Length: 188
Image (cartoon, rainbow, N blue to C red; front, side, top):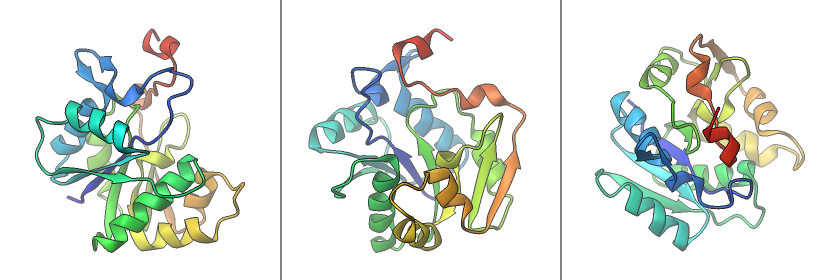
């Protein structure tokens, strides 16, 4: 299995606090995502964070896991696309060719989703429930990094990822894609 990159560098403005470390069903959200990745076979986990304070919080929530390290966002622009670009640059420098992406705010994601993505061979393997899930894609680092580098600033991340050879994998278990962005999302 490929290494994983958990995207946790957002400001959590709608939530009002770091959502990655919020407790969901007894565990921090990010730990639930990390366990799903591990259960799917990801041995090495990288976590994209925005700053040292967030890194400290997240590493505390993941202290029970081995082979986890953080990547600080060093891009001046602050967006999901720039955070991913910054993290993929670091992955390329580390010699990582292919990586499984996962946002920190999908605490009900299941290992089977990541396992299904491994069945394809395109540079981007993107799951789709009701909607496309670009931040859950299995990607070739260099191909996606090149697409992010040439993308216009206003281009959406979904369209940028779809601009490279992409295979969309239909997933019937739509509940696992439930995303937590605000306190009301915890009650759904």
